[in-house]
Length: 488
Image (spheres, rainbow, N blue to C red):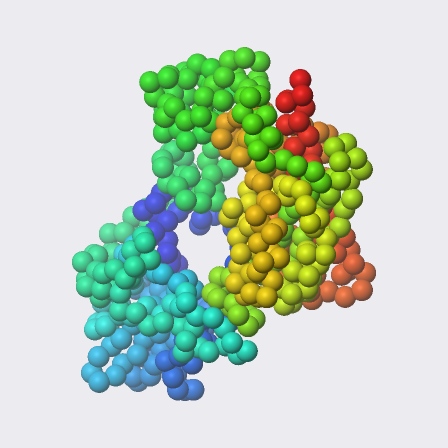
């Protein structure tokens, strides 16, 4: 059987569709979904207890029978030949058939119209006509009280949203414009699925948005130092490679965007593998660095449905921090940290305020969209701590800026400048030596930690501590590497 989502995969990339039929990919969801969207929709729409609710691998005839009996349908599975669809909610009332599409997001976009149109095309082949279409989605402005108010949490819209999250085109009208005959698409999927191989073809879809999950299966690349494919923000790097240009130093200057970062890369590959703008680094240090130096890092969980009072949809809960403090240059580091459970926001704030020195620079890596934003959100949720938290975020300095702006580039960075990339360049440490190596792994472990007991819980606590502490120690390593460049 094929699913309607396979059409989207095929149209994005035929090899993506073909591989998805053969290779199972597991992944840890970035967002925690603590509620059932279908259960919330049933409550929001006041559906009766005897409505038809489909299950995985249902015989599609069951949904057709329930539709003929004019029951409200929830998660109903339909199929045309070997193409299967799942319909969130289908209701017949006052002579109309109404389709409700569910979105565990706040602003369903207009590009969703094609997916809905293909669902309706299948229903039409089954002699089911849709008269109205609505989207049920999360209300971005909802703030949870002591209990979850489903009617305030879920919004029912007859329109999509544009790229600026403003109300856009009417769903039904846009879907009508997107309707097409899906039978040729189904036949093409059958043909592609029967092939022994589909050769990879590099397109913008390979890396647009999130990199394709099958990228490594298609392109067995090793990021060699100085390779032209490491050129950041470059539209033409793969074309240059195909033309025989292999190194950054040989880049066609008429086909580069001319960013500061690209300049640093080309200069590094031209002159021994390292580029450092010492004057810019010294200015940065003079303007921003003062002791004691604090190295700070947070870990957090993201919730689609706000689980605690004062939270909005997709708010985060910061459950851990690591702090290394260097009182004077070259002095011994002091480390402290925090790991909480459940709604630990207040405990986190109080532990952080008690641990961070009252003076000096607080170095954070990629702070604007991470640690600083976390503190701003906590200040909004707990205004009694706003001034104290503000005193922390106003002293934060982004340690990634010397790298992201192109003031420092080592060809071994291969176009990347994450802490995980920099640490083995500037030291003998590797994140791969830890039990937890990535942020999503830490989130998964924290989920497990809250449900564990005894020695298992203690083991996870130590693993989380080691991972977050590695981030702040990595900041220490990277900063002192920069110091080394400035002091030469």
